[in-house]
Length: 224
Image (cartoon, rainbow, N blue to C red; front, side, top):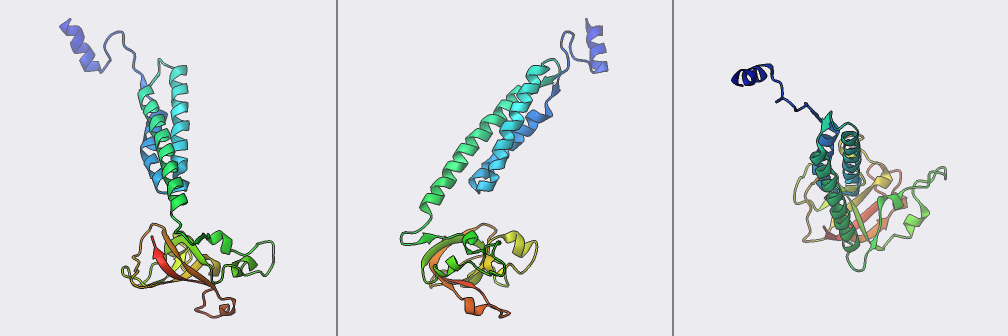
């Protein structure tokens, strides 16, 4: 008996009667996607992670059931699916709560998409509907465009997408930025996360054509 054990140890073979089964890489990928699905709490776009985790987990379970003598990893696939579903439900629930409660009373939510010109109208620089927002109290979310000052900022450009101003073209489109002036004692710090601001919006079509012009500006009395 000892000789047989020694031969098995030397050859690296599994004990007699047990066949080697490979760990499903798809099951491992499902678990990784499930762990990363916690990022769903940061933004709607991260919902792709739990969806991927569920699909990979389902695929892994199907493969394991189809070839049980060749693959293992059922528990990992199930864990990946459970984590993905939990983070999907929790993340979307949290983001929905934030969306419904983040606008202060007395303000109207406005997005950068509402400030864009109609592509089908040649020559239009900004939508006529934007003029209707002039002087209105609005709430808008965006990113603080990085500048020379990193903290205690009173005046800055709020941009639609950090990728445009930080990792691509350094000058965003005129309709993709809002000049923000914070009222005392409000001050902002540069951050890679979006900021919510509320205040009075001003639309200045007469500023077009100037090198340092801005079409939209916001006198903000609320910063989140």
